[in-house]
Length: 92
Image (tube, rainbow, N blue to C red; front, side):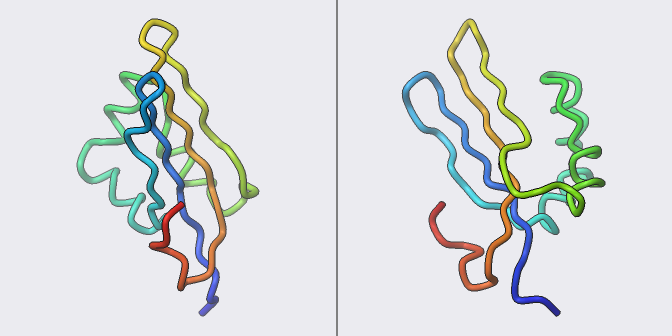
């Protein structure tokens, strides 16, 4: 088994205030399908989490989603990163 893992780094800001900045192991992110989160993202934001997660092994590291709400200034960024197991939970 490799000592390198894929993670999603999720950054959410409301205006100038950072609200979320976390790393989620891809294996855990795949569980979002079970709770209906993927359906909500697709319906509300047009983000197809299933498509991203299904193709994640072929995607290079880097930003895969960058959404800004023009009315509120809310900003969501999602990155794919490859990290060593020991840094999986380290601060992003």
